[in-house]
Length: 179
Image (cartoon, rainbow, N blue to C red; front, side):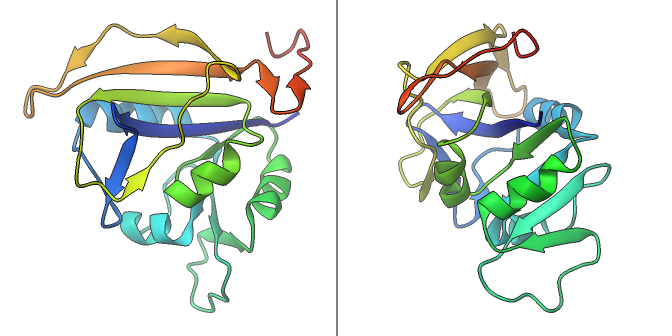
């Protein structure tokens, strides 16, 4: 069974972006992202793909575009919706990671199994993209690293993993493979 994951760096005020760009340059977070997602499927919206500018190496890249994209790179699969992206990713087995943007994250929160959150201890007041609030009634933080400090910026951050404990309609069944 495929594990649906979300991976994102989030400010204390849930900000994640501004003008289709990341808010921080944190090499430690970039390394964590690369190590966590390599070998897996990554799913992103078209705008996120445009901000990255290329397919991510050593990953199956799926881009959601609601409009035809005739000149899409051959290194990505293009689908029209998140459910289509999940169906395609299921063929790869293992984990898939939703990597942005804000609209795609909001959609993915409904069915995601696991959240890989970099909590960036910063507040970005002029951000224009935000991550949904993590509802403690639905999500259990199962691990958190000690805070780290980026030498160049002085920004402190920590990595957390959350597991879904219930769905909006009731308790989610757990099996021994997921625990």
